[in-house]
Length: 98
Image 1 (cartoon, rainbow, N blue to C red):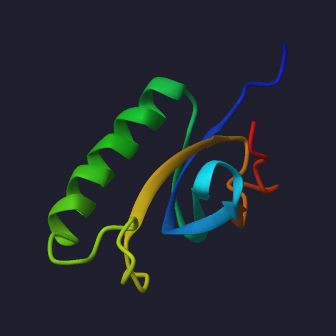
Image 2 (image 1 turned 180 degrees about the horizontal axis):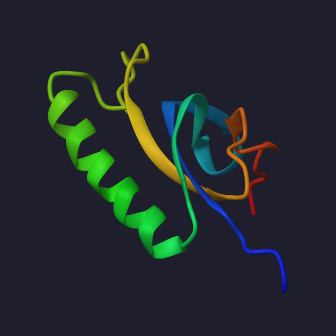
């Protein structure tokens, strides 16, 4: 019997990082692991759980600045889904402008 892929739903503190000067400058979203919420056997269950967690987080974070704000200073969280394990941070390597 083949190994089943586990899906991890984890909570990340979100931020935005400068990617480079191309096309007038570009930024990308990144996150640092705050905690693993749950490990589930199917992708559907993982995405359903992440959607519910993000709806709750949207209500709880209503007064916090958006990640895209120039005066954002942390404190916004988002639930993300990964296969097998949740990385300490994402993306694991800096994206390149293409």
